[in-house]
Length: 118
Image (cartoon, rainbow, N blue to C red; front, side, top):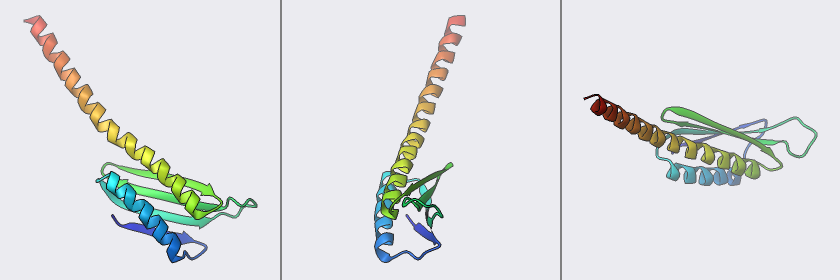
C-alpha cells in the first residue's frame, strides 16, 4: 500500500515519516481493499499545546474513510486517527456480510411463501 504524507506549514523529519509508514502498513495488512492512503499533518493556529493535527484518508473499494485527530504530538494524533480508521474499516467489513444474510433470509421467506400458496 502506498502512503502519501503531506505536511502543511512545516517539514516532517524522517523519524515521523517512518513512524507513520509503519503504522499505516499494519492497516494495509488488515484490509486488502485499500487503494490509496493519504496522511495530512498540519499545525493549527491555537493557543493550546494541542495544535498538531493528523488527518487520514483511506480510499477503499466503494468508500472513502476519513479520520482527523488533534493532540500535543503528531505521533499521538496519528495513532488516534489510525484507531478511528480501524473502527471504520471494521464496520465496512461487517456491512457486506449482514447484507448477504438479509438477502438470503428474504429469498428463503419468499420461497416459503410461494410454497404456502401452492
